Length: 84
Image (cartoon, rainbow, N blue to C red; front, side):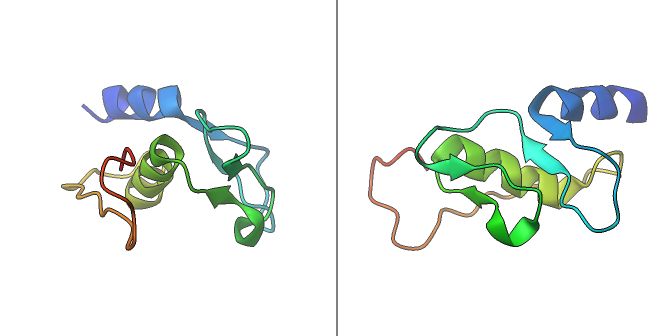
């Protein structure tokens, strides 16, 4: 089961170059003008519904870790029908 989950995670997560000082987990799908990949976690911005969901799931699972139940939280102040 672990191999299948690992392969599934790779379909929506890109892992950058290995480094202890650089942020390496990128959602494969982002929206231009709303989201931003970054090499440092503080500069990464995932505001679109799809990128925010993928980023939250990446943070929840960690690549290759056991997967527990995931609950997506709609961001505070999100408009009704905004896609979240």
